[in-house]
Length: 344
Ligand code: TRP
Image (tube, rainbow, N blue to C red; front, side, top):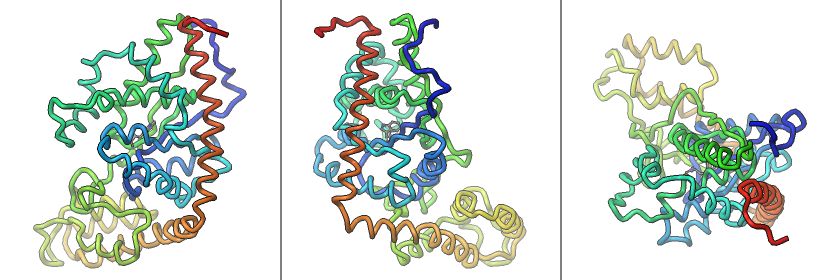
């Protein structure tokens, strides 16, 4: 496409946009799936993190209070894991009206049939038991997410594996809008998904979530961590230390793969476990130590920051203001690119 309205790529850092619904404290699944990528990339990229409260409302319409209460909690989690507020801009979705307006425009370039086929949406509809009574806002949240991503001109989106279909849907919207405008108004984005795949819950269930009671939160106490480790699903056939055990589907090994920096040691442990001679108690001792070391400093930073809510609120306010200008710029570009009437 010829005349691009975008700034020349070489002059700016590539942009990251990603976010989380504020519905509860974040856990080590979020950490492995996305948070640690964000911490690693914040210097080389221009990063924006969205506390996605309007998206959270799409499946919590009856409990807006929960969403409100968790906004600062998510911001705290970000800072506690090492998001640097100088490098990364943290902002509040409902404070960015341009995103809502972009959503409204994009909705005309997406069909209901396509939304119903979105695998993430399909899964979530089943999980939440919506049946036919799907709130329209819920069905359409992928379009709002497309607005989030494109509204910042983001090209990289660090997310867990379950979000991949949403990035694909975003890029479809981008192509439709660009086609309609006859030029490159919007950029396509790439999902950055960890190789290891999604971290299961401690009970071995595919999804770690607060509602399932199988999560380890980033603010977990040493006792809570050890308690969760005790409950970790291993190999139910592995009764005696000398028995050969299964590594596949064994949550302790999955977590070691995700968090143990010593890959060679983990490989040796797997070998020993398969052959027999490695007991669950000593295996669990290792993951306990690693999780205590990972979460300890996060918990401590979180505790300190929680004592200064005005500071966290100030960051969120300043970040949202900066993002307001940026997203308004994209909205203006889309409006004029589509040829909407301008009053000015
Ligand atoms: N859908 C994401 C989640 O449920 C949250 C989110 C909102 C998001 N807007 C986003 C993620 C934009 C990536 C990009 O966790």
